[in-house]
Length: 125
Image (cartoon, rainbow, N blue to C red; front, side, top):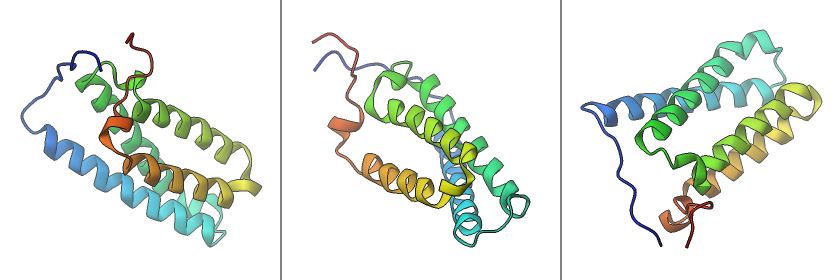
C-alpha cells in the first residue's frame, strides 16, 4: 500500500456526518415506501430530495476530507449509485428492481473490509 493520505477535519464534523447519515436513512425509508407501495411520485418526492441532498452532502464532505475519496472503491461506488439513480428516474417501470439493487449493493460496499472500501484504484504501487 502507498502512503496514508492526510485527512482534513473540523470541529463538529462527526456531528454533521451523523446528521447527514440520519437524513439519508429517512430518505431511503421514504423512497422505499413510495416505490414499494407504488405511490405517485409527489407523495414521496420530499423523501427523494432528502435522499439526494443528504447523499450529495455526504459525498462532498467525504471528498473535502479526503481528496482521494473519488479514486477509492467507496467513492467510485457513490458515483455508480448516482448513475443507478439516473436509471431509477429514467425508467419508472424499473424503480422497484433498481431500488433493491442500490440498497443491496450499498450494504455490501458499506460493510466490506476497510482495506477494500478505501483501496485507491488509481494510485501507483
